[in-house]
Structure formats: C-alpha cells, structure tokens
Amino acid sequence: MIDINGVSMTFERDGVPFTALDGIDLTIADGEFASIIGPSGCGKTTLLKIIAGLVDPTAGTVTVDGTVIDGPGPERALVFQNFVLLPWATILDNTAFGLEARGVGKEERRRIAREQLARMGLSGFEQHYPRELSGGMQQRVGIARALAVDPSNLLMDEPFGALDALTRQLMQKDLLDLWEEDEERTAAFVTHSMDEAVYLSDRIVLMNTRPGRIEEIIDVPFPRENRADVVSQADYNEFTRYLWSRLEGMQRDDMATRGAAG
Amino acid sequence: MTEPLSAFRSVALGTVSVIGALLLWELVGVADVSSALPPFHNVALAFVDLLSSDAFQESVWFTLRAIAIAFPLTVAAGLIMGLLMGLVRPLRWMFDPYMTLALSVPLVAIIPILINLFGFGRLTIIAVIVVYTLPVVVVNTVAGFDSVDPDQVAMARSFGASRLLLLRRVLLPTAAPLAASGVRLAAGRAIKGAIVGEQIVGLVGMGGLIQRFGGAFAVEDLYAAIVFVGILGIVVVNLLTRLERRVPA
Ligand SMILES: Nc1ncnc2c1ncn2[C@@H]1O[C@H](COP(=O)(O)OP(=O)(O)O)[C@@H](O)[C@H]1O
Ligand SMILES: [Mg+2]
Image (cartoon, rainbow over all chains, first blue to last red):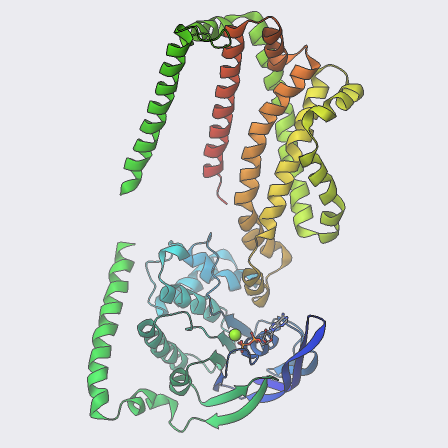
C-alpha cells in the first residue's frame, strides 16, 4: 500500500521558488494498479521519485506498507523510462543487480534472474549485452530486474514511453499477464497515454500542472480480468485484433529466432 | 563482416604510406638537397651500428630504467588521486589548480628547479617524468568520474546499493575507459619527458646521447637515435593498448 499525505515539492529556479507538487493526497490500496497521467511537467516523475525515496519532499509524508519512508526500501522497485541498464554488464548481471544490492549470493541471484528473464521471454539472452537488444527487450530486462527483488510495490515511470507503438502494445499485454500471475502487488504507473492507462489500471489519477496537483481520480469501469475483451467489442475490433495478432506473432518469432541464435 | 577487411586495409595503407615516405626521404637525401637530410640508407646503416654500440646500450638502459621506475609510480599515484578527486568534491577543489598549473607550465621551465633539487642523475629524470605525466592521468581519471550517468546512480540507489557496490558496478566502469586513455597518453609523455629531461641535464640517457650527436653534427646518428625513440614510443603505446583490451572494465 502506498499512502501519500500532503506531499509538496518546491524547487529553486533562478532563485525563485517553483512549486512542482502542491499538497498531493493519494492512497493506492494493496494490489491496486494506479496510473498517474497528466501533461508534461505536472510533476509525475517528481512524485514517483518521492515515492521511490530518491527525493525528499519539501512537505508531507509517504507511507509504504505501514512505514513512513525516508529513502529507498526493499518493498519498492523502480522501472525507468530509459531502461537504465548498465552497458558493461551482461543481461543476467543487469537483471540480478537489485538482488546483488540486497546481498543475495551469486548462485541464488543468478537463478532468480534467469527465472525472471524466462518469464519476460528473454531466455537465451543472459550473456548478451544491453546494446545487442532492442529497446523493447531492454525494457523487459528493466522490468525483470525490478520483479527479481519481488517488491510489494512496483513504481514505473513511463516505462513504455520510449518504445514504438507495436512493441508498446505487446509489452502492455505482457505486463498485465505478469500482474495477474504474481502474488498481490501494488503499482504506481506513470504514463501519458490514455489508452495505456485504461488498459492497465484499476484507477486513473489525473494530474494537472502549475502547480502540480491531482485534478481527479477516476475508477476504470471494466474489471481488469477481461480488459482485453472490453477493448475489442465491435466487429471493427475483430479485424484490428487479427492484424494485431499477426504483428505480435511476427515480433515474437523475431525474438525467438534471435534468442536461439544467441 | 567488413571488420577484418577494413583492418587489413588500414594496415596496408599505413604500410604503403610509410614506405612512400621512406622512398621520398631516400630520393631527397641522395639528391643532396641539404646536409640536414642524409639519405635514408645512411641512417639505416647508422641505426644498425648504433644498436650495437656500448654508449647507446648504456643510454637506452638508463632511460628505460628511469621510465620503468617513474611510469608505474605515476600511473598508480595518478589513478588514486583521480579516484579521490573524482569522488570527493573538496579534494577536487584543493588539487585542481595544481593540475591546471602543471599542465600549462612548460616542462623546460621546471627542469632547472628539479636539477637543483635532485642533481644530475636518474632522480631528476624520474622527477621530470612524474611531473610531466601525473596531471594527465589525474585529469583524465577525474573526467571519467564526471561522465557518470546520474540515472545510473539513481537506479543503483533505488535498489539500495551500498556505496561500494555503486563504486564497483557504476562509477569505476564509467571512469575506466577515460582513465585508461589517460594512462596511454601518459606513456607517450613519459618517453618525451625522459628524453627532454636528459637533454637538458645533458649527460645521461637517450636524451643525453641525442644532445651529443646534435652538438657533434653527427646527423646520421642523430636520425638513428630519433627513429629509435619513435619506435620505442609506438611499441610502448601499442603494448598498453593491448593490455587495456585484456583487462575487463
Ligand atoms: N531537480 C529539479 N530542479 C528544479 N526543477 C525541477 C527539478 N526536477 C523537476 N523540476 C521541475 O518540476 C516540474 C515537474 O517535473 P517532472 O516531475 O519531471 O514532470 P513530469 O514527469 O510530469 O513531466 C518541471 O517543471 C521540472 O522542470
Ligand atoms: Mg516525467
């Protein structure tokens, strides 16, 4: 559970105080998937960094799983928009980084990392380096790295923002599948795509800018379990779904052959 | 696929270029345009003679030993200083002015001071090499730490990485390539510093020998000695480059 209480953030800009976040109150329940959406500059990244414990707010507190945070913690993991993999480390070592930071032994962390990479469809890439992978595959590693530490709260900052539309759609679907598969996990997901927010979340937090604040919190009226069906009711959707499955198949085949070659 | 071919082409072109230059040298030399440029074959003969002469062997050993003592010392000290200055801001502010100073003051201006301090022997040459190479290693290593990606630091922190893990997995791998190129630059400067130092001291090493050849207008010997120093530089820098590829980041 993530409980944000009266969080404000003021930056100094050319000597003038600048309010990036103004009195944010938000509770994300256990197991809830909440998307945070809003125009660029409204403070989404700042809010996520505060929840991650990377930035201290000027006012207010964040309580995660019952404890007021004062820095990063093992019950949270972060997925970055630009992946932030270490270019000199193999995919396996990148995936195991969080576990290494937590003092998990080499054999154990490699076993877990392999498992997570397999779930992400990246078996066979363990000894590759990030530059050998496409953007989508690199973000799969970013997600695998976060899931490897089995956090009860997953924080994602526009994780698919840097990906092309097809890859993006495929990743959304896979993320949702992983979500259903795993034990209860809470998610704070920053995006600026409305479709993405509707597809993935239980609730959508609409933010506005100047100063950064919450405008409205909207419940998504379809149950998450059959989200895919809701999105494709009309005949028109039958056709796009066919096209989509073809494209998906092609992309998956491409990944499979690259994996086998590597 | 194109890599072996282009590697071959670069070697081939390099070779052709060197052979062409030597041919031109020989032609101009034989034409006797200037006494400053003897024909290449005379220099080649002088080179062979030089290799077997006692004075030369003694000088080479002197210079090589000075470099062999000073260079590893400088590299170790430079990397440690660069690491500390890269990680600890106040240390950087304290030592930065000296590095800038050492990089801009001409070598020849410092040598008389070093002679006063350390005399006319090997100690002075070692000091010259250290003064000349240390700042290059330091400045490059510091620049390496400056190029650290803040996102990677944030990533490491978000997973609760210790300072040691951050250093091992993020900071050192980032700084290593620039630090290594600092070391490579320093190798060339170590040779240059040794020769110039010895020339000014005037008595010892390859630099001393070059000085004496120059003074005696022994042009062929002078060229032979210069060619030897050039080859030494190429060999040392290539060795370091190879070593660098072998050591994982
Ligand atoms: N470290 C900082 N110093 C000064 N201003 C900042 C800093 N970080 C963010 N800001 C400002 O705060 C506002 C919100 O930024 P950000 O959280 O990145 O927005 P978003 O992710 O919604 O696009 C922006 O106007 C940005 O320029
Ligand atoms: Mg942002």
